[in-house]
Image (cartoon, rainbow, N blue to C red; front, side, top):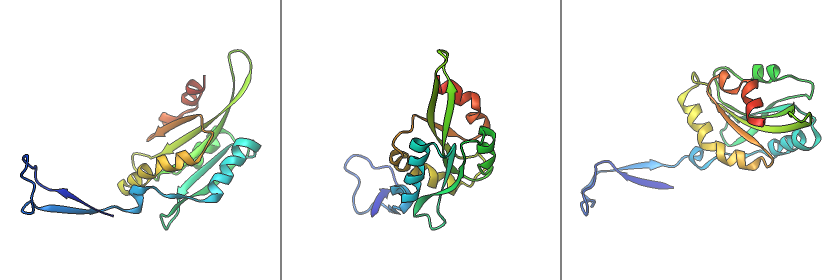
Length: 164
């Protein structure tokens, strides 16, 4: 797809063939990545079967689809999950957060976390940002979404506050 953008501010009726025009090719990133079947299958196993505490996803090296990078078993802690996220690269993740309500009821909420550390490459941030919505829609059953650029933005207290 080819889209033309004028490079000068056009006065009403002044945009004609004499205006300089910049061409911008739409890349696969702007259209959103595909979602690997294994990614949705693994998410459903976390949601329905509770065999994972978390799943971390990445955009594959060919930048064509979102794939599973790592899973954490039900006994793994939130600290295990945050330690598994790269400190200098973007990722998507889902975390199955178990908690007890003020009425003493056991509950579980699934969080979608878009991890985009401030020190990651600009290109990676743009790729993950433009693909996030399509991937997020493929994960039916997510309760809350968090966009984090720093570990403090996704601390356990943040999840606890959102879930209650």
